[in-house]
Image (cartoon, rainbow, N blue to C red; front, side, top):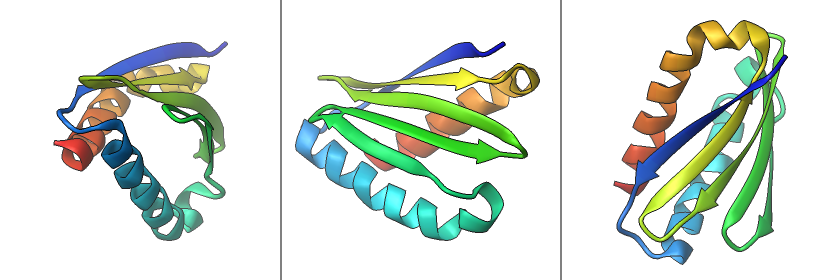
Length: 102
């Protein structure tokens, strides 16, 4: 049973710059983590909303990232086995996105 984790990361950039940085980070992540993670799917469904999916350690993760005026909102569906790592997953998202848009 999946449970949705919500993470909010503040930023002070315009939406276009956030999107540009996210696109660059996705290209890098696909190259750097392809062997460990496998295929990373990502698609902008609106100018401000990205849907993504990936698999880690045999677990499938689906989520979205929404660019809001002063923050990014990430919603990530965690498989049951990943709930044990919810805190570490939250910290990782905050650290990586914070470094990207901070």
